[in-house]
Length: 411
Image (tube, rainbow, N blue to C red):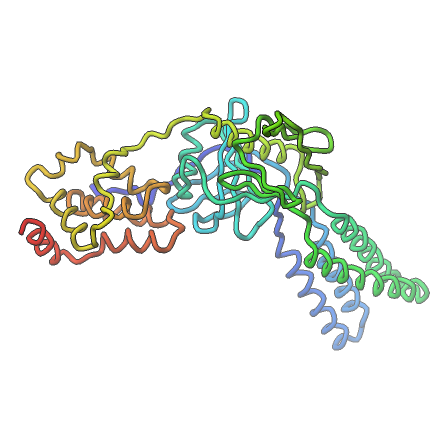
């Protein structure tokens, strides 16, 4: 019976924090109403119908600018090869992820993701247990220890609040222009033009001078000031009322380092209190790992060393050796490995590209039919183009080259 694994999906319950509320239909619908209203006002004998439509369209466009952040919600995460999907986030592809890290939150686990189209607004998945986290990590091609960087805004600038205030005043002015009184319309029009000018000006400033952000990397934390704090010197970190307090080990003993914060509730830019607690938990977990408090990852290291290309080994010799291992009389068993171990190396996002390509090449010899079905799922989780090409090349090499490689290996 044909393996259906490439079509399989897994549903996992999670609490999802994703502040990005796109609502593009509101903006597009408002813009369409504005244009349509102007057109109607020029062709219809009752001009105020088009006029009113265009004003309501302008209100919709402005309402998109003050849309609130999405609240955290319990939902189902659908895991599939190379992507996950939730009602909150939509489709998240492995290739869209710029960073990921995991930490335990009480009895649960939190997986924090950095999306390339939602920079400085991390997506947080709070999960019930380790198997749930493993399923999501496998779908997204994320290793046990994570990768990349996570950006977040601990203290948004006042530009965000200013933008919301002037936008709300512009909306009120646009609605006031629907009152059929010439004096009211004239005054509202003056205020509307002024507020729209301010909306545009503040938007330009916001993009030119964005809120300072902090960045979690593999080795430590970049604070908004630009200061770098390595994980291995962090003794403790906690969230207080108006700051994140770091306890840092120095040559003169343990000292305190403060990062000012200002949490938000409805504002899109910034971090809620609960989200900040999750991010600080990630910092604490990374610090614990640097101090030796971590779970050792189980992986066939001896097999990886056997498959890896030697320092002075060219591609031809390396491929010949792999083909000998795979096609020799007892060559495969000589690896002291099960097929599952080869698959674990091929699917491991933290394994070297050479090792993953070598595992694919050996599997092509001993388990070709299964590889043909499952390889698309593996490639879908690989973000690095070079690694993806190397794995694909090791599988797609034409079969007629195999005897020559074997002969070369035995000659």
